[in-house]
Length: 222
Ligand code: HEC
Image 1 (cartoon, protein in one colour):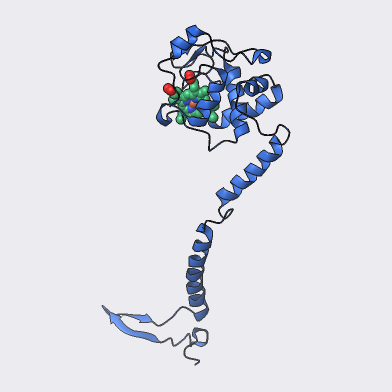
Image 2 (cartoon, protein in one colour):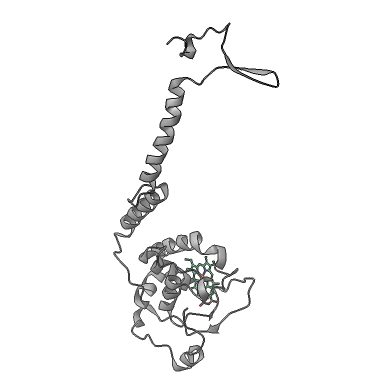
């Protein structure tokens, strides 16, 4: 028994492994039993842990936990305004609400500036501060483009990535950029559209005929 235990091995007279390669011999120093058990144990644990970690249960990965926390925070934040509908009246309402517009602005900063520029002046995406629009005829179309994307994903769809309220608020923010006429690297794209309605006249949804004709052909949101 004592011979098996490396701890009690006679250090001045260690055993040889019994082979010789090119005249080189090797001491027989096996790794201690506890180390082997730890090694095998950690392999077994990794199998169990991998199955547990990737099981479809919610909240296992850091990413999922972050998403759950984010959603909870969002519910808290949006408790005050409830669930918004992405219609003309709502977008106009928050376009004129300084405080909530800041939430829309921060959504824009996080998700949109990489293509539309810090001020909305346009980069790979079109300028959002001028009077020209490619996919937008009325203010509610902004939310539609944001939700569904456009041009086969060149403009990504945000419907699954943003809270519905964020979509409304970022749409309000985008609507508020109109007329700031920031100079960007791209020429004006699309057509000039009718001005946004005044908040109290939101029933008047139809753009005038001239605009409808101008946008009848190439304005479908893809
Ligand atoms: C990966 C680049 C990219 C990102 C990120 C992006 N967009 Fe876009 N966006 C585009 C492109 C490209 C178009 C033009 C699509 C077309 O040509 O029809 C566009 C079009 C739009 C339009 C329509 C403009 C028009 O003239 O009709 C709106 C509104 C818009 N984006 C808002 C947003 C918002 C809000 C976000 C952030 C939540 C965002 N975009 C993020 C690339 C992007």
